Image 1: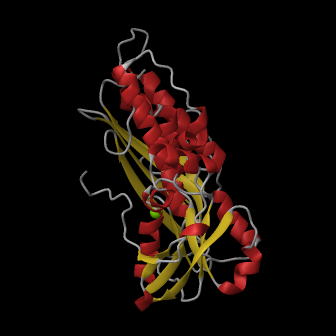
Image 2: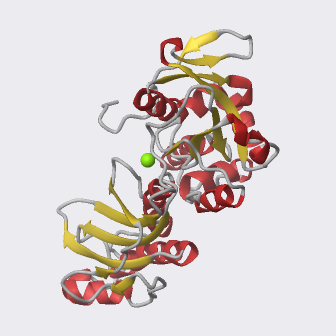
Image 3: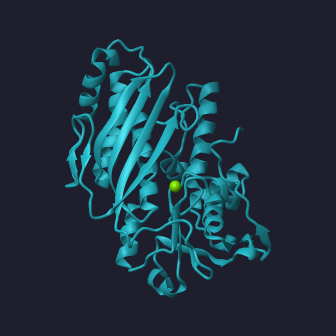
Length: 349
Ligand SMILES: [Mg+2]
């Protein structure tokens, strides 16, 4: 699909750098009053004066963070935006603008880049984001995408990682582990396909897992939900590397301990059935899987009734004093010290 073997595909060199940016961004519409000038000048001009500004950036590299043999370019574009928006929402803020920079080798056609930008466009449209700039350049090998997201938050609304308090409740949104299992399923199918290119995979039993891997959604809805419920988290982080490493970030930075209850960890039925099939422990997958892009936060106990029984929110533990440590309380009521087995970007295999 992406190899430039087909004669009808357009080489990116035909458009030149500026022609390419104009072509790829022509369908993007400005949605925010704060965007005074988007693409088309030396720099974007934003007018965000009354609030605090959030800035976050993420770099994705082919072969390290994604594999194009099972990640369609449109999904990659969408996911690359979600990864960044998730960090803005984790500050309890509203994402407003992004810049997108890509480096591509000449094996990518114009049509391939159009697909990538289709996914970016869909993400911008669905989440109300303005694309305000970026750069395209050539790479000798593979594809690199760097996205910077800009957001805004009222000074009194911003939520940090280092402000969890003893006796707070630990809450997670959605469910965990599915994105990692989706990746395992796709890896397995890739290997089957390499042995037998005529094989037709039946992925119906894994549809939710694959969707969570290929098309994650950042939890913009939760920021609004918490405002509607009149709950301000005491600390918050998004789950990109796995539940255990995110809990450890909150606890280490807040200088507190935590008891996490194994039986409370929310799991989709497909996660449970696929863990059985792959002979994996579902708790381990939820703790270490990563890429769920759910939000993990702490709330004061006085807010418990406001979130109780909400289908998006699950209380999974509580904050303790620092010297109690960070523990998993198992179904057998044993306490196990939690370690960050979550995926580490700088750790070799
Ligand atoms: Mg984050």
